[in-house]
Structures are given as structure tokens and as C-alpha cells.
Image (cartoon, rainbow, N blue to C red; front, side, top):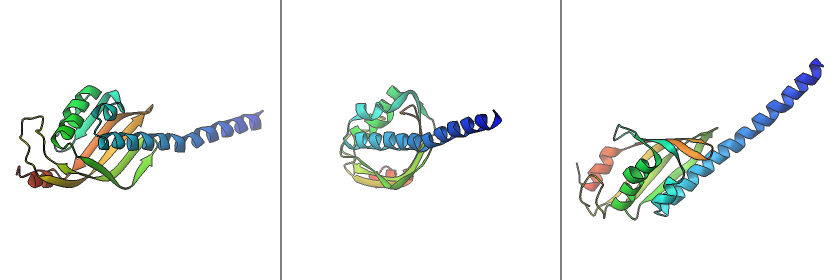
Length: 160
């Protein structure tokens, strides 16, 4: 009986282990589809990838935004209004481990619209690099952390 229990445990473990790459692929697919929605300039579609209680942390701001609706308005719509031609490009392949996805990126566009804080459009093009780390659970982004060259970004816009 002991050997049978070991065999059952081994088969069960193999099933769990074989599910890990599928979970990682699902997380990667969610993040890639999220970027595609940004690049289609569809704030509603992009926000649909968020869990209701998503935490969106932008290191240049310092305070996280909590909640899908708040992140849609405060981040996605803010950037897409200020730069309607925005393009968010993944540089290289993402690093994926289970439910976590990380990658380096470039964000570019032209600031032809106002920012949510009332800053007027500068009309200037920009391109800056950064990195993001996502946590994806049950097919939804639960955490997004963005780290980027805010000084370079603001300097390109003529705001610093």
C-alpha cells in the first residue's frame, strides 16, 4: 500500500508541476493582451484586464492607485488622453515565473492632449524606457508596478 500511495503522490505532483508552465503562459498572455489594448488606445479594454481590487504602483508618483476604475481613469485614460498616439513596446521577451511577469519597455508618443492634473499639452514627442512587474491571478492583473525614467520623460516634455 505504501508504494501505491507514493505512486499516487508522484502522479498528483506531476499534474501540479505540469500546470505551472500553463499558468505562466496564461499570465504572459494576459499581460500581452493588456499591452495590445493600450496600443489600440482602448482604455476600457485595457482596464478589463484588472482585478477589481488591482494595485497600480507608479514609482514616479509614489502612492499606489487601488481599484480597477481608479486605475483606468488615473493612469490609462490620463496617458491616452495626453498622448493619443501612445505606443507601449515590450523590449525583448518577458520574464515569467508562475503568476509574475516582468519586462523592460519603451513608451512613446506625442503630448497633444492635457494631463489629468491640468498640465497643458506641450506638443512635444517623447520616448522613455522603464520596466514593469505584474502579478496575474485567475486571469486578472492584481498588481502592476511601473519603474521608469520620469526625469527624462518630463525633460522631453519641457516640464523640467
